Length: 252
Image: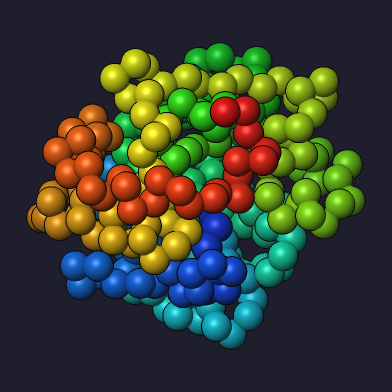
């Protein structure tokens, strides 16, 4: 590690997705999407710990059981107050720096996570480092790194439940309070026209096609995924017109 800060990745997931309920446990190639995400994130070299943050609702018992099977820590908290759920999960794991990895991005390249965390530690003047303040990377490759002290401060300042539902949104919306930095994708990976997040059923088809294309491999890169998609343009056409919730909160 490049810093003495204990760095913990937190993955927020729940079964009650509005557009595609239960997506996190949808099975592809004999394991749930969450398992594929674990396979990717466990290849990171700069994390001290990983914790899944789900809600206390009984429908999420299946998530806790799977995390226990995979020996991944799991925290259960508020259904809608995602900011509090993430903060409490990270405090429970005694984190000093948090790394938000989204549960609907099972194809995320672990090298992107490592790059963001390393930048955060090297440039320790920032409270928040991410690649999603503006859109240059393909959706589904987002990662956010932040000081736990900054996340706790945002929690104390933010009373709006709609904002708290989006966890780090208060920090992202207040650059006058928090020191923010956005990592822009290099030209070869600057493909916001592609999408690898899972919001709707058509997204699952894309993820399944990619995972099948790289079967028995958990270390394929974003560059390789892009080449695969360019060889199969019919895949990206499936979700070209899908509206994403994050679009109204991000520079395009």
